[in-house]
Length: 349
Image (cartoon, rainbow, N blue to C red; front, side, top):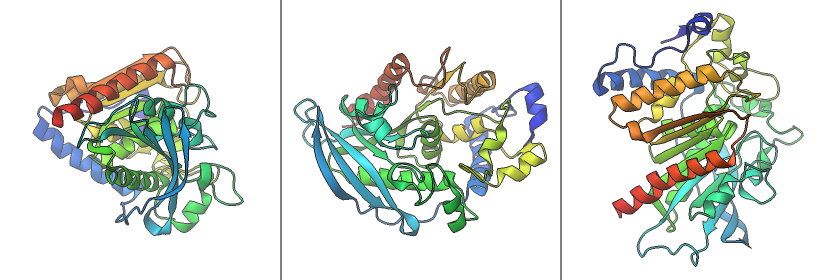
């Protein structure tokens, strides 16, 4: 696999199903995509027990917020908010758990606070809104944000990570840490382990589908302004090495210097299929400005879900807005999660 980027910029995003006529043929291609992805982001080490600890507890309107920490590989500690719905508002059926969501924050210094507290920005408080709909929500800090900013460094400065792990990537690190979060959710009596989703905007949006592509415990995905293919991107090097502020996948820089890319991101998103997948993009997004290739990528993913006989599991929307997660789109996204987590979970009980 691999492409000449200038050629894609002229001709458009590569067809996902070129030469693929059956689910079996797709499975063979999928294995190659996964190998290439892990080769570039780095393998995932064995996860230690999460060992969650409650740091503090506060009663909020309609829910309880637990400030917790838990363990990850290489001795790291993850900080997070665990939001539990008010049982008087959302009675829990005997012997059953609530649906749950991993809520992943965007690129913001405050990390989890932006999405899980009333202090968060407008159109970003999706963790808070989901617990108010009856979900258990885990909102962790990613490395370089919130309580996990490296000492003496600004937020989203990944230099100290690469000093410690020069052959790895923050993409794999975040995926691993979020898998630890799923471990935490699965350990809770309050959670239905067969009804866990992932949601995020921007940085949280692509981390949501990166996570789902590597961990099939995620049963539904929502990504807002998080899909950004190389094709048509005026700054594709933001995926590669940067001395500051944040490096995603260092290995991709060498390819970009040779006008090549090792994969396209609709192929990485395809690792999620056939998990229910909701995507949104804005035509006036000032960060991911190339909305036409983004739309082409959505179309290719829709074709894949159709091939797999799961067309109803993929939804994509492109609106006239900017780099945002507007109220009407969040409403559609929450209804999507309700269908695939609440309703499907109820069917399985």
